[in-house]
Each structure stands twice: as structure tokens, then as C-alpha cells.
Length: 204
Image (cartoon, rainbow, N blue to C red; front, side, top):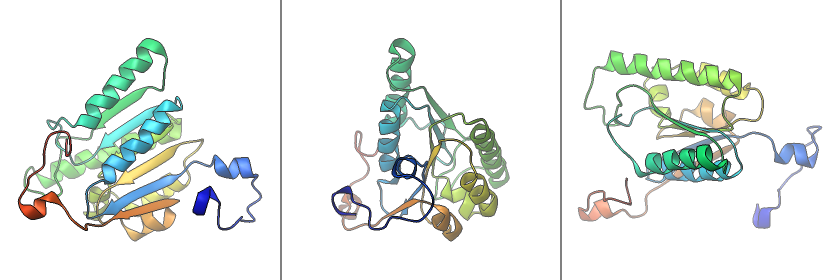
């Protein structure tokens, strides 16, 4: 799509404006870092448009304070005090679960994930947010905790103007097929290859 020009104009009965403003289902997958970072960047743009932002983290620990969370909460306060941007909600679904699956009881985490998805479905039906970031949502799908077909059906048929961005490794093919925009991160080089662990301001 060079210089912002589309490669094909579909015969879908929509005007250029309708097609341009169609809500998107976005998937950020792949093995390299940057999936969530890119999703939060898109959410920032949505906030600037005055849209309500809903972030739902599925596997990061509820005790883990990430920089994006603090920044978005501050933006939520800016909106409350000045009216600039849009409202912000940030939810950690359950106690957290890392992709390495080292801690916690699997049944409890599966229940937490299903409860989180049920809440998101309710919000989609109510058209609660303009942008949803379902951070690391691919993992409960991959592990079979949440039914992929149910998710695809709900997201494909969501009402109104609601953008949904999903991040995480190993996105299921059915989700990729349903998405409007899919990116895959791949590693060329990483500081960890030289023994350097994550650092403040870069990883969190």
C-alpha cells in the first residue's frame, strides 16, 4: 500500500468514507517483543480522538506495574480533569499468568480468563469502548481456556464502531483469518542474546 493508496477497491456497496471508517479487528502476534507496545501506540491514537479506551491484560501479573499502565491512567485523569482525549479503563484479568506458566493453579487461571472474556463480551454488546486492547489474549485461546470459535463469532459480529486489538504469540489461525490487520514480529537481534536482561524504561 505505497503512499497510503489501496491496492484494490472492493465491490462491497460501501462508500469510500464508510470503508475508511470501518472498525478493525487487529492481531499482533509473533515471537519478538513489541506486540503490546504497538497495540498501546494505536490506543494512544484512539485516546487522542476522544474514544473510550479499555485495556484488558490476561497473563501479566496483577502486581506487575508496567509503564504503559501508569501512562494511560494519567491520561484517564487528564480526560476527567480537562475533557481532553477519552476515558481510560485498565483491567488485569485475575491474578496473572506468564507465558512460561511457572506459577499458580491452572484451573483458577482458566476460570479468571473465562470471566474476563465474559466481561469483554458484555462490554462489546453495550458498545462500551472505542478501542479494546486484549493484551496477551492469544494464550488463553491457545491453551483451550476460551473457545476460539466463540471469540471469532463475538468479535466478527460486534456492534457499532469498536476497534479490537489482540496481542500475544501463536495466534490461532481462525483469529488471523477473521482479522482485518495482522502483524507478526520476528527477531533479528535482541540484547538478551548478549546476556542483557530487561531494563527500566525499555521493557517496563
